[in-house]
Amino acid sequence: MKNSKTEIELRYRFSNHLKSFRTQRNLSQGQLATRSGVTRQAVSAIESNLYLPMTAVALRLASVLDCHVEDLFSLVP
Image (cartoon, rainbow, N blue to C red; front, side, top):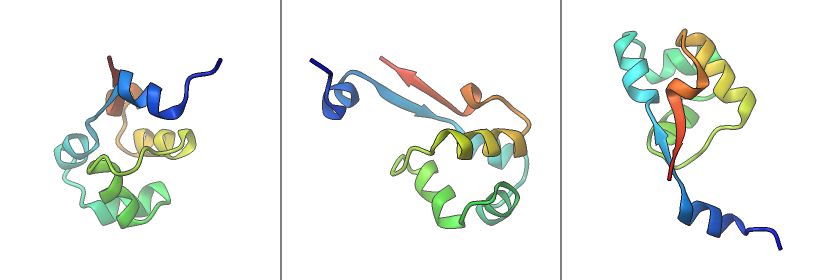
């Protein structure tokens, strides 16, 4: 039987370092959003852990911030 999304979410937390990488590079949420092709609201929601980005968005964010996706997001058991 497959695990439900809730069971997986209970086992793992997502570590999110987007805001620290963004501020280290002196970018506003709006600047990061424009450069990565998302809305400022999406950047805000990701930084607040309200939204986990799809792979393509995470890759674009990492590219703009000149880092690896794993630097921005990781699983914490």
